[in-house]
Length: 283
Image 1: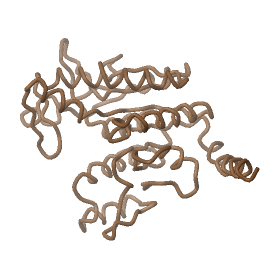
Image 2: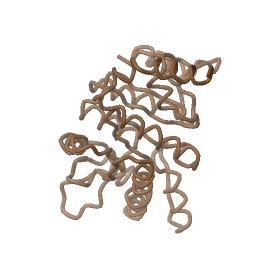
Image 3: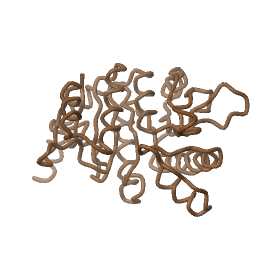
Image 4: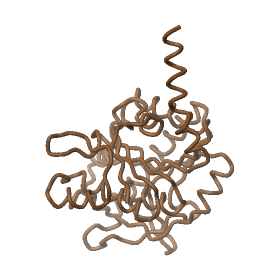
């Protein structure tokens, strides 16, 4: 009986958050270990289905860098990184699209549908809803940056009850163009801002933003983030993560979250508990 009472208390504690986020849009960038572990994949799908059932409008943007590197290695196609970003030659771009749109996107969509969701997979090329330009063509090739987002494409899918699952490949206006490889974090930020999301959540392989004593910051403002970058507390791979968060909140998203995707049900813990499990970034 005590266990049942505790279960009810948990549900009651979550109720204010469920009310707050009902009918709101939440964009989730899905990647890292959460995308590679079968157990975590199942927990992720359960979280998304529950969010959908309580009325949260979920949009997923996924990465797939490890799988791309693996297939490029298997095919003996050279791949190069500059400043942490992949140089996307035409040969590499073919594999990028094959893995992101043809493999990972459909895998996630199928997983969600198997758990009772109504998910549909798309890439930025579909309806040209993610238009892009080269980041630096001479340096990065077909690695792109988002130029514009056709928000109505996503809104139409959400209105029909779908959970959009987005492969971050950008379209170009030129006929026959192979498209652009877009960083999934930056794609998630751009989509979240364009569609009026209340939150964007980045699933990572770290607990969140840590101080120099390796303690978690639960909340940071934009000014605090800039200070931590300046003094070296935020460095390395965390810099592009927080920059993506800042881009989102500067674009009108209320809050951006960095959470540990290695924790089971991390999304629910971040959204539906008072303390959360990661770092939230606001203006």
